[in-house]
Length: 353
Ligand code: 11C
Image (cartoon, rainbow, N blue to C red; front, side):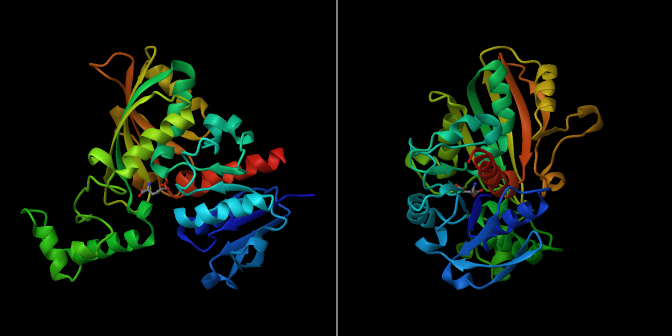
């Protein structure tokens, strides 16, 4: 019998991208797809692969007969409901941060550590944070050949990582500032936003995002680090299977709607030439290499949004650091960074059921 797939959070931002991804697959292995959401959204009709489905309310019974349950919901909802789905016999594939660092929950990027999928004592598999995920295909492929030792990254994160309210805020700020000569004097962007009744105190971001960059994502953790920076460190170590990997990250929000970018400075056990790195990237189906500096060709979020692969460019051998490459990656944070990777894990599970 064909397996049953459930999507929890079907009406949310990532859930909507998930349905788009399912609709775009040439074929799917599922005998039934069940859409689950909060009682507020229950009864809503959504067309999936040509069939109109009715969203059902989240309840223990909603998981009866389900083989794989994908969760695109906030941490606290996953923390409560993924174990319930697992207890009812489903494998929960969770896109929240609730279980990522649980030693009994694998943290999976299929092209890097698909072998981990079969080791899931809690019946839960975690999907990484979109920032970590955006560089994993590239780093995993290089690590297999050259042995990653150290990682220094700066992120350039899109507003949509913060959800719909964050997207709305960026559009609102851009509209309020359009046509104004601001960004020429300290504080004038804030003042213009206040005059437009958009004070920063009402924003999901701790500073203006339009015409600005904001060196902050997530919440404050020990010693000045943010939760996002610690996720990059801890999740990279777990996915790559390098518990002592040296990692330092600075996470920055930029006025981009969707697609996270990262400047990566990666040190390996052995020398890696640009040509070798290019060959490795070209051989990886989930990577598109765009790296022609003479023609000024490189990935940018505006050219990558909506795409499934990770785009890589600006590959350089570091001049002053042995065995070190610098490169730039862009990945759609809602697709490979969230919905697509979760769905790829689910399909991998379906192949193994
Ligand atoms: C952001 N990366 O850009 C975050 C969003 O742990 O899944 C995803 C948070 C997470 O704000």
